[in-house]
Length: 292
Ligand SMILES: Cc1cc2nc3c(=O)[nH]c(=O)nc-3n(C[C@H](O)[C@H](O)[C@H](O)COP(=O)(O)OP(=O)(O)OC[C@H]3O[C@@H](n4cnc5c(N)ncnc54)[C@H](O)[C@@H]3O)c2cc1C
Image 1 (cartoon, rainbow, N blue to C red):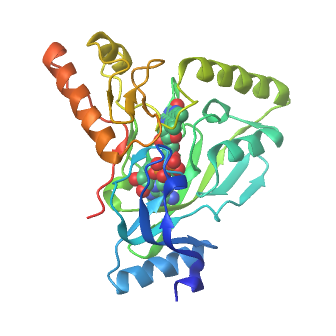
Image 2 (cartoon, protein in one colour; image 1 turned 90 degrees about the horizontal axis):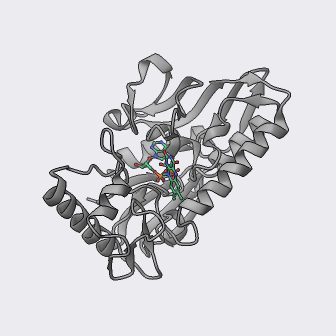
């Protein structure tokens, strides 16, 4: 039955669907092969009262250690891009970097600052991904979502957005397609060089040789979470195989077999120590998922 909607894997490992590399699994992993099939799948899930969760590339989540008795929906087959002059529409399962490189190769600029953020376009929009001074929303025109089983076109102004927050979260929206207005450029090589430079910077400052899920905490107003964590002496501190990176203290790395529990215990310790010494409540940037 689930095969009607796309590719189906039964008792699937989620190891490659979360960047921390937590070894967990689900009853079914379904990859819808069209937006309409995604919509039909959601209706089927709703009618049959089945538990489900949408995953992009899992580069911003802490999955539980336990098996998920339900359906994980991956949108990775929804990856088409349509370019019409400066207007670009893409399906939300596309890898963000691949999407941005396609824009650049077509002489379009505006998104290049975000080219090194791992994950999918949908994940980036859902969490309002960004780097210093640039967010995915800057060039956005509209997003098509599935809400309550129906397609809905939301213009940029219909969406509440702030630092790593969007109102999609409140409305249980599934993001299907997004449209951007970019600028024409002849400087394709300059953009590519800028991305190369940023890649070198990231390699120098982030522990990319280990599995991780990016910044653990948001930077508090006027300070940096990494600085606070380092100053309370937790750089290199570990719980099981989860360790506060010695390269960048706002990253937790998986040194091999870290469990979800190890990561969450380490997060608790960091929060407590920073609260104790600075009276600052660090806010998680990563999303802790509970299956129930
Ligand atoms: C090394 C590293 C560096 C990083 N650097 C940055 C950075 O510079 N800036 C930054 O902002 N982030 C950064 N991140 C975090 C992460 O890459 C982003 O948050 C990314 O946008 C998440 O995309 P994803 O597809 O992996 O989403 P996931 O982690 O799979 O999902 C995140 C949330 O989005 C929801 N979701 C995903 N797709 C959809 C959809 N189509 N419809 C509805 N809900 C959906 C999921 O249910 C989940 O709640 C970094 C991560 C890593 C590992």
